[in-house]
Image (tube, rainbow, N blue to C red; front, top):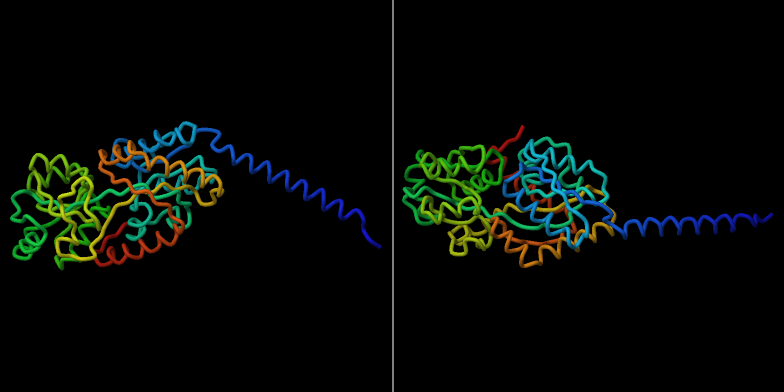
Length: 328
């Protein structure tokens, strides 16, 4: 015997399903309905915090809602990153952070409460922070080749300073050692400011620091810059050669920054954020402000975040293992 009620029940379910889908669609279509939070896993006032606040101001126009900065520093950015990784994936909590969070710290063995490749949905890359090879003016070198020769002649007199263990500065120095065949001893500092003070004073003859930290001291002649670590010349130091141009082909180390959301972000919300961020990074005003803060604008969506992160972790782990860069 045929069940004539079954088609009617199926029809009612279909109508109900369409209604639910329509309601959900209209809810996401209205995103954002309230303020969006950008989490900065750094203390207020630093370069990355400055960039986060710039992006927050600029994003308010395309999103049409306030964008708030929430500083959650600590544990080498792990506290802020874990907070975002465990937040609801609704587009209202985002993270602005660097490759230290996603690749450098994990490559050094850091134990984190998040998976750098699987815990996040990437909105996109927003910029790079070039590093430079810096020396005290008394060092008898005007280029990288002369510096390498001077170090080989007096290896015990040339330790190098970084602004912290397992930081981008430390990795840049380790890569420099590995590319040149040198074995300069690493001296970690607690931040860029004390590192720069000792470089100027001659307590450490060589350092690897950001272009933005170096620029004021270069103008005053208190330090010398021999090269940048990026594949291309820095927009802020266009006359300074790259390491590749200095005789080390393939040398490329870049500190990059990305905006990410918790994994599971609805596709239409992600698309709204991608378009908003793309518009912000296309603005000449934003680009000028980023350059003044020491960053180089670089917008790029990341269709395969996990693939990119895992590839970079593997590359940096090889550097870390050889240089014995470790985070407990």
